Image (cartoon, one colour):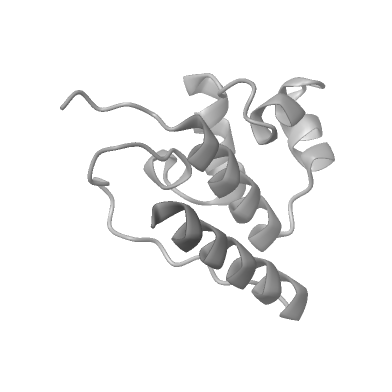
Length: 104
């Protein structure tokens, strides 16, 4: 099967990683110097370009393969992103349950 990117899963995963790292869309906008694109990525309208994915991986301190979700087996081993506080732990649990619900 030809590998494809799942925009919905990627947007959910991007938002989960941002929440766990304590990074807001405004932080990403300032870091990348783009205004509307970040909200379009989070809403699943568009996907970040490879340049933006490369920059996001640096900002969020995860490999690009961890951000992007698709229909192939990941190359990188599973990266555990540790939440910083109890709010972020709750968000992590929420996103994990949400992913389990959609995977079933």
